[in-house]
Length: 190
Image (tube, rainbow, N blue to C red; front, side, top):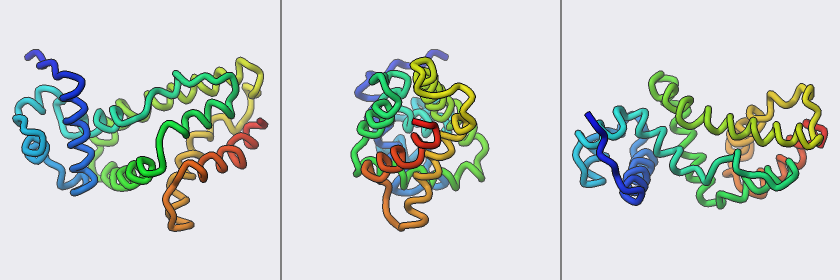
């Protein structure tokens, strides 16, 4: 069956409603019925368009991302990191962090959610991130054999999780910029 083409505006409305519902009720309690009711659409339309709840959630999260990391090229790795971090304001970062904390629990119970997140959100982000780091290698900013290169995503994800856990404070731009400048770039020899 062919998918009905939604306008970008309508698709954005649907994705925003999904994220709002996720924040309100969590992944477990999120249902296609609730999304259909919130968006005044039919459940059949949702399944036809997205196929499953995990795919809809992953695509909503992807749609919410402020651009592609591969598109950032300021001429320096420091500039690239700072530009990437400046794309989201502190309020949105806090909302996204809360959402991801909730989903990090759900992926343990729902392997299909983990698979959808990996395919539709994590792998595209990692590809963009790898391209950003490769450009820094090509410019001579990074040594290609630097052992820290493969751990940079882990360091960044760890910073996102640890701030709330250790300091009971939300992640914000100032913290992440300082973390990148104090931890990530020195680990890379920049």
